[in-house]
Amino acid sequence: MPRRLKISRLFQVDEGQKLRRLSRLLAAHRLRLAVVIGSSALAGLFVLMLGQNLRHFVDKGLHGGPADLDQAVLWLALLTFAYGATTIGRSYFANFIGNRIGTEIRQEAFRRLINAPVPMLETDGAARRWSQVVLDAASVQAMIGAVLGMVRSALIVAGGLAAMFLTSLELSLIVLVIAPAVSALVLRFGRSIRGLSNEAQIGQARSEALALECLDGVKVIKSFVAEDVASRRYALLSEAASRLADRKDRRHALLNAVGVWLMFGGAVLLAWVAGQAVLHGMTEGTAATFLFYAVVVATFGSSLSDAYGQLQQGLGALERLEGDFGQWTAPAPRPSLPPAMQSRSSVSELRIENLHFSYASRPGAEILRGIDWHCAPGTTTAVVGRSGAGKSTLFQLLLRFYEPTAGRILLDGRDAALLDPAELRRMIGFVPQEPVLLEGSILENIQLGRPSASSDEVRAAAEAANAMEFIANLPRGLETDVGVRGTQLSVGQRQRISIARAILKDAPILLLDEATNALDAQSEHLIQTAVAKFAEGRTVLVIAHKLWTVKAADAILVLDHGRIVASGRHADLLQQGGLYADLAALQFGSS
Image (cartoon, rainbow, N blue to C red; front, side, top):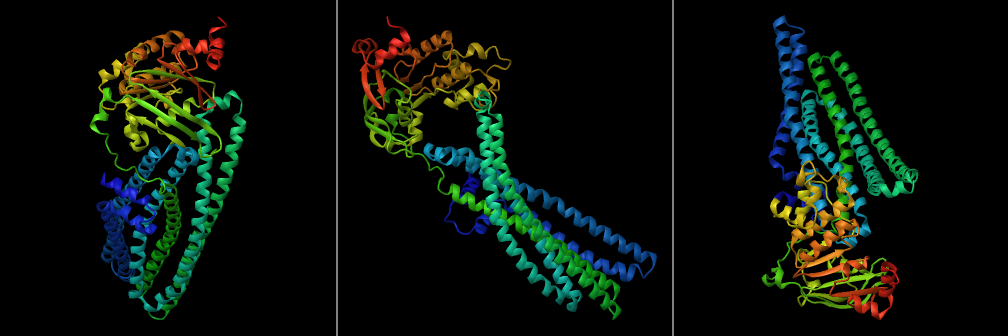
């Protein structure tokens, strides 16, 4: 939990500069970070010692006896091995920290996304947002590795520069001429890379979001033989993103090349100057040592420029994460309902008063217009009407996926708008028209209704939903994997699992949105019997197109263009005529 809180600070736009956020993320892994820094410091020390032993190798080993040569080579070999050994801890823990931070960012972002209001998810495009999160988390992860690599490179460059000045002050002054030019160039290229990286990743997120949507609706696409259309749309978006990425990569490559040219060009210049110094009295070992340090500084200085480009790309990802998710604040601790409202038997009265609703994108088009209804405790109310009459919208308001434009919903006399949405939803069992299953076992999917339920309770709920009949015939029974979005099961089987989930939840209010629409006649009859038994003592609202399934309802509401145009029992509505009688005539025949 403490680590989650640290990661969540990443999304708070008032926490200071991005580098400060980055340091807080790293601070959560301070022990492993200490290993990385310690290994980097040792690497720098061994590089400096290699330079000094190179002097000994040239001045003593090559100009002394065999014993001097053997000793010099042995020290060089030992220091080389020691330097290589430091990369083990540094590389492993640097990668571990980057991977852990990337994982925590994705977890925190998903937690915020899944808790975000439904209208915001629909408006902003949840798939596109999540694609962007995955890309940005990968950029941050790569940045962590680059930053920790910069620590090692910076320590080695600093030590190498110090050793160069101690070895030869005159030759080192040349470095002071080269370094400022390289630094200015790196900073300039870094800023341009950051901007291009932002554009490229946003473009890639759009293309990947389109791919997710197409794959999710692959059956519809295939039914219209629209594979080529979908492929062309994806190709256009991905090509646009690729062109932006190419521009960024070219700029990055140019930055690296220029850095190498300047660094190694300076080293060549230093080699010429060092050669002149040897001709004027400097020992060969001293010149070799200086050139060794110059090459080390050039090599690791070049890696610093490469890492700086990755740092800019990662900081751009952090900036997007701030902008995108700073507005989606982390879920606050949820208050509990009063004890009296937590009892299933005492919470079942539902009252709807003058309910109006319009979608924010279409404020002038009212979906619901002045709905008034009282659902007495323990009664069943059916909602019928033509498609687009507002039936499903009414359910979404009851579940507080949306807020009413006007009017209110009362639960046992309490305004639903004043209740915590999560607590309100715990009191409602919901079976949607399209069953939704998550990847995992049948047992896990039914347990979504009540995660603490035992396998025996799950089995009882499945039996009540007429699901055990097919579950028992599966090789692994309740442990059978349903596949992505439940694709390993038929639609009817998925619906029965969805109903079992609602039964297991044991909520005082039950919403059924055409829950038996996907079932065959036999299963539908069995489910109707199970639901009728389960509905006893509960307040039930049913959306139905098949009117015979709601003939026994205590009341039937007939919606048309967002209004209740008639209400009553089945026989009474038939006698009244109007829309309900017309719908009944279509389904039951003129008799």
